[in-house]
Length: 33
Image (tube, rainbow, N blue to C red; front, side, top):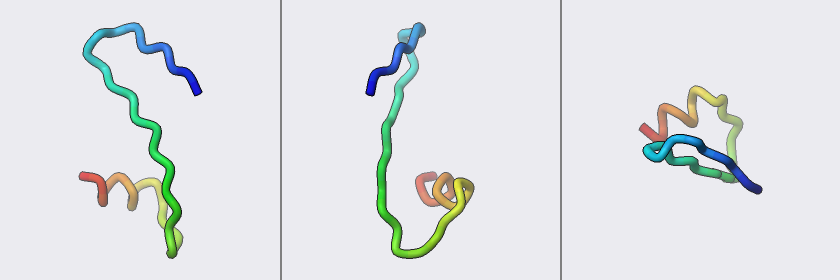
């Protein structure tokens, strides 16, 4: 997988996880914060 990020102060994270229970994108964002 390749990303081209044209600005010097941006980071990219490729996160893959397996969950026992279903979770929405909003649930995942809230857990990471």
